[in-house]
Image 1 (cartoon, rainbow, N blue to C red):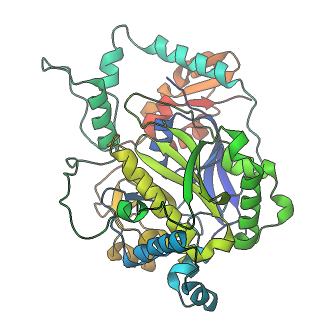
Image 2 (image 1 turned 135 degrees about the horizontal axis):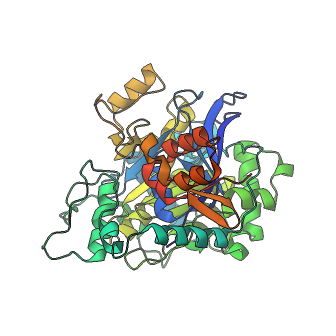
Image 3 (image 1 turned 120 degrees about the horizontal axis):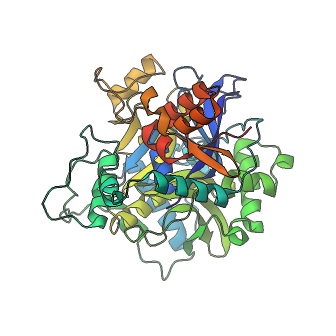
Length: 481
């Protein structure tokens, strides 16, 4: 079992990447030394997001531009006319090698599909990192200490019971006692828990009847043997630095950042790219019931013949594929690569869901309604926003958009009585695990008994409330002087 290890940094005040205001973006942050993939799935389901090893959660009530976590149900996704035009345009280019007349329209500003791809790529600005430096620890040693502590605290013979009764985020029901009914297989139990965690109470979708309308898969699997160009998408683990840090990748990243985001070329070093897009605290995992490539951080490299034209940075998690960043060659903006990349990633989720049904969501990062240029994410059908107070998913409709027009911060959940089912309360504090030094790991209640101090109490409670009860008890909180 992998143990997540984090150091909480508290509140951060920085420049906003959306409205470009100074010292108006308010968030909470923490450094992740290692993240279990299920823990990170739970964290993004509470509004967290990672940038390299740094994880942050916006203070939506206080920040200048409230950011709502957005996801798309890939199995319910429907192509729009705009989506189809982009797919046809790419297929024609691959088939004939000719740039459509729409490129001229794009230059004149008359084609929404093209200009959107050029001006509002499916990615977010890099968050400003805090000045604080994380403590230096031996990650493997800390993991061993945490695992020993958990094993020590687990009653004899209780392993199976605890595993079957682990709390879920999508239900108010308490775990039931073991009955005389035949036990379900572990794989089926894990699947049901993940579906409950993601709020999926429906039966798996039945096979849809064939229709004349072309699906996303149909568009992406058109015959290609006689094509003028060949487009190949290669999946590479982020840890494979020889491929993710290749000269072609760095050159593409620099070109994209300079042309699209007007970045200073001097700042676009290999080290900055590694910190932002290569480094990841996610532990690569390959469970028996998971997808073939396993869970963890990956790059999808888009190769047009022998030329790299785009890279999608993604995290594959137990319930979703989360888009971290997407960058492309601006010379190919006429292909609307930002939107095309999103459609490709949705297709990737659909492919995985065929063998791993619990993994059916595509997370797009943040939806920022108060920033018009960032509203494009809400154009994908079957999209949901995360309520920032109750952490339930709300279908993004015109009614929700109207509410956000009236007030940029919204609770989203109309049920005034609804509460966060994973809420951390003060009485849960005793079970939070702390790493005190290279050789000492203990629960908060033991820490107070031994040291007689509660000087860190307020900060630990704040952290625990932000990550939720489940993660607060599962992850290791670095509390080193």
